[in-house]
Amino acid sequence: MTLPESNSPAQKLDRSDTRLRHDEGLSGALRGFIDRVRSGELGLLPVAVGLLVISIVFSILNPVFLAPNNLVNLLFDASAIGFIALGVVCVLLLGEIDLSVGSMSGLASAMIGVLWVRSGLPMPIAVTGALAAGAAVGLVYAMLRNRFGMPSFVATLAGLLALLGAQLYLLGPSGSINLPFSSPLVRFGQVMVMPDWFSHLLALLPGAVLIINGLRKMSLRSAANLSYEAASLLILRAFTLTLGLQFAVYYLNQGRGIPWMFAIFVLFVMIMHYALKRTKWGRSVYAVGGNPEAARRAGINVERIRMSAFVLCSMFATVGGILGAARLASASQQAGTADVNLNAIAAAVIGGTSLFGGRGTAWAALFGILVIQAISNGLTLLNLSSSLRYMITGGVLAIAVIIDSMARQSRASHGRG
Image (cartoon, rainbow, N blue to C red; front, side, top):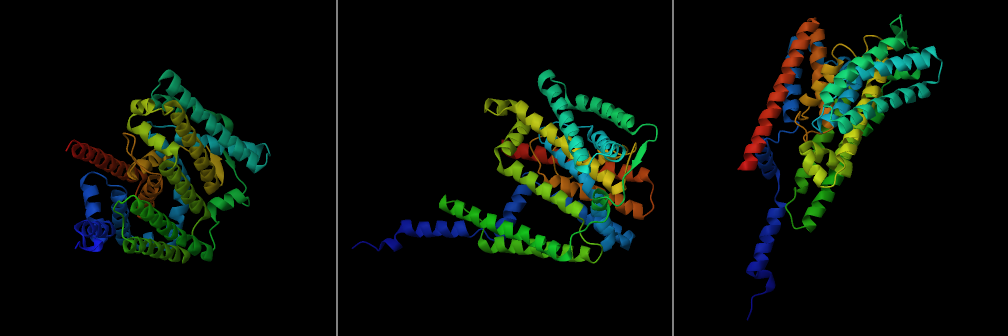
């Protein structure tokens, strides 16, 4: 007599495999996280630790730093440069650079002032004109890189000077143009915040999306007979994320509330994250950044990918310039100069985007600019000079590049092993 099929060794092994596939609990997730860190896959860990340390240090030195209204102001200030940093992420992923993003943002603010205030054109037309100019600048950089092989460092450095000259020419002898304080654009950049109930509602969405995507991934991996994350761990992650976001929203609502400008910035970060991670274009960006020649042999139109990245970078810089003008209610010769370039590029790198190309996410722009703006805000509260702010920001940038380089070496060594 044969044993029942359910008790056969094959069935026992299958049940054991099933338990292994389901038993990806907290301990398994922790082991996987440690393994990824050891192999150089740091993700957003350095910037998260940095934000925590910065918050603790500045709150000890000045308790006002963590006051709700101060954090709201920090989010207002971070949004404009955050858009510029989001564009910088696009070109850094290709192993390229755009040194003219600050000048492009300054030119965009000047165009808004000239077209809208001086010429009397409707604001939407002025904004459209500025965005078109940004797209044209990006196309020029792409052409110089693709057709003439000009390094992006040189092309955008020349663009920096040319765009700065165009900005000064447009503004003329006065050097500045004031924007109407009562206009929707200025109110959007200075005072408009989300209703409390709406901000709490939005804070529920990330957790819900995490659960939906997690369940879908579990189903696909189960059908493919692969291991997958336990449902309990997925729910725990979603609950923790939702709880943290709800507390952050509640705390910020004790002040003025969450700025609409910051919410729109986060929305664009999410859109770019989806585009980079879930679309053919995004996969092509990472492929070109990792190895352009291999990407070309795989059938990817490298020149077109470069063109799209440079155009996006210049257009995001344009959006940042428009929002910067709205924040200050003016377009001036100082717009886009000083530390705008430094902060935008530093934010992308500090957030985890590799200078070597092929690694990074859109979230780097968000978390990186929060680090930069937290440092700037904290030092301002301590009444320290701008020279110290530059030196400290430069030091943080140097640390971020060192971490990136070490992580790259670690990945290379694990790959050889």
